[in-house]
Amino acid sequence: MISPRPRLDPAVADTRRAVRTLLTQAREASVLHDGDLVLVALSGGPDSLALAAATAFEAPKQDLRAGAVVVDHALQAGSEAVASRASRQAAELGLDPVTVRRVTVGSAGGPEGAAREARHAAIAEVAADTGSPLVVFGHSLDDQAETVLLGLLRGSGPDSLSGMAPLAVRASGPAYGRPLLGLRRHVMRQACAAAGIAPWHDPQNEDPAYTRVRVRTSLMPTLERELGADVAESLARTADQLREDSAALDHFAEEMAEDLAEHSEAGIALSVRQLEANPPALRQRLVRLAVASEFGVTLTRVQTLEVCRLVTDWRGQGPIDLPGVRASREGDRLSFAAH
Image (cartoon, rainbow, N blue to C red; front, side, top):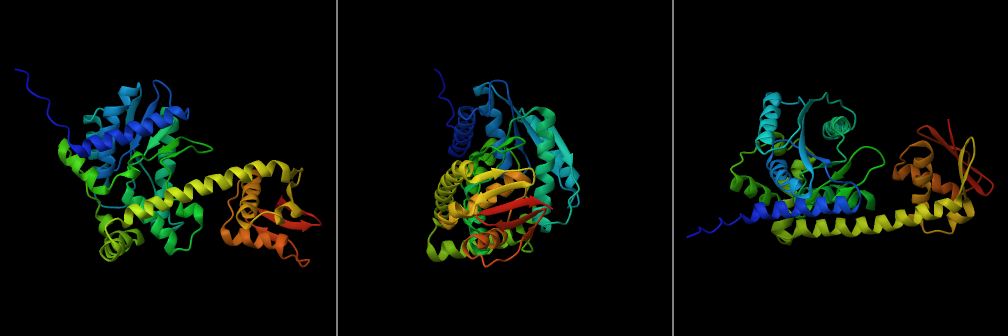
């Protein structure tokens, strides 16, 4: 008598299905092709370990290779041992190659921002060294909800409130994939337990000195207690809707920029009349797009609004100095030049 196959744990099935969907989307977007290497950004925590296990299982089914990159931020005692343990677990799961990078974290942008910048720079280097076109991260639906809530608390615009995209193709470097954005954090913990994988629990994830930790451990539980258990799902849906709206506005702005922009040796100019005829959301995008494409500078909302005053509230005021760029109005032209 043939014994029945053991039932696959639902959490393991969910993580595998999520990875399978993301890899398929990446193929359809021509990010991935047969034989390509998918890198898992692995911290050793439950989310990234569950992702690593699912990727190791799913990638070969799509004729892809799976590897991992472990970044040691060197911010805690014993961080080297944590990174070494994560790399061993990745190898045991069948990921190859597995690369560990130790980084130096600066201070610009605060501790969280500086660590993120150092981590992403190291990941991009490993992706370039290994020829990987896609790096996948273990961000969950809870992470997405926290990101949206933090953006709301900071008064951020729709781009920030759009949260993280499941698949982000960037102008340079590898594409970023976040297949687990539709799954709650507890699913990944259960997937690790079902697979017999022991994750590392980062003590900084419980440190109230970090704003995100306070949102996670205090604010979100309060909202769920007062408003219902589906607060995280509602915030994630908000991110999805805003991301669709932002993508549409960006598309229209890129189409319009071809007619509005005039290039010169000094820089770029936009038609004031045409800028003024557009709604504020498009006008601001056109200004940011012009500066970013010509000078590689990303304007803040405050800077963008100040430049737009040269269009909507011009009283003969002089140029505005921005980081590396000067904006000025010359008749019916809003001009940008390097300085």
